[in-house]
Image 1 (spheres, rainbow, N blue to C red):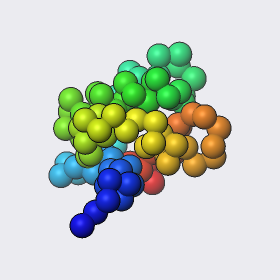
Image 2 (cartoon, rainbow, N blue to C red):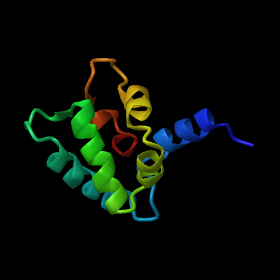
Image 3 (cartoon, rainbow, N blue to C red):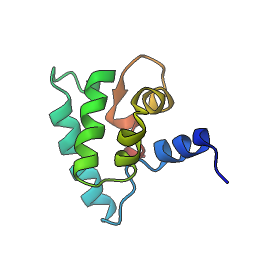
Length: 97
């Protein structure tokens, strides 16, 4: 049985996994990333990241709805912020790897 922490880790890793082709998925997440990046600095602050998750949840991308439902934005943000600069760039998202 998974713990809540394990479930959140899985959600962060599979955040953008959907049955679409990889290119479709990347394009849709890219569009949502651009919409969420309100200051156009090519990176997302925690509040902009919340918008990305909400948009991805609306589009039924990956585990975004799970993260939104659990209000796990901050925990997932911290896990994805690979360089620990307080922002998420597109390259830090699983879909970009």
